Image (cartoon, rainbow, N blue to C red):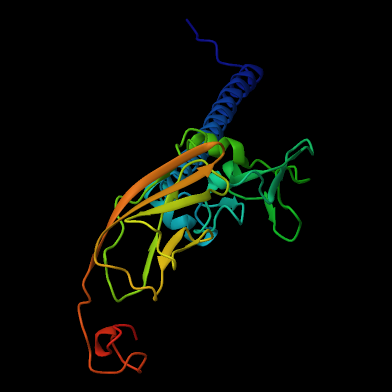
Length: 290
């Protein structure tokens, strides 16, 4: 029996079907790859966000732009492109995130809505690996613009407001406390200075008082509210023995106090140079103070 061959029309239909199947497979693979890239970008953004929150818990400020890569590299390696836009004040080492109520950073979202008091912004180039989100520091406040007129814009952007960051680092649950467990000892013939470290949810802790025992208080006692430093100078001389110091602070209706014992030992030296003479070390002069 003679076998009937495919006609040209049948072959064309078969090739068309095969082509559609192959094209559909390519599209499916492409869509899967794009979805994977977006997922990876979102995961990296989340990992970096968590890293920044842990950093703020420890220090308690945000890292600077210069330090950012060294901070996040152990967690995510070196992803590019990635934008980090922190508030300039919150990323200063001397500042505490919990002490602020506003920032100098805002976000303009894709709908043109302005989000104020942003702590930091993260943006990833996503599928096209082209970072188009802008960080403008020439405006007041500084601003990050999420959406650009380019049709290829596909950045993954995440921002954290100041209140969200403060909640994450437990600013609202931190008790006011004096961190020091002790204050340094001293000698009868030396001036004294010691810094009290204050921690907790506060704006500006106010110093109430430091009481001394034995009393009366040392007349030369001073407290620097800007640096939380207690000190005394000479004269009058400080008698030897144990000086009990009880200091109290108040902030946001919270009060904290702590007692310390400072040992004042006899002068450890009595040099041969007259008091007030030029010397290289305190013990070279009779007053014990260069």
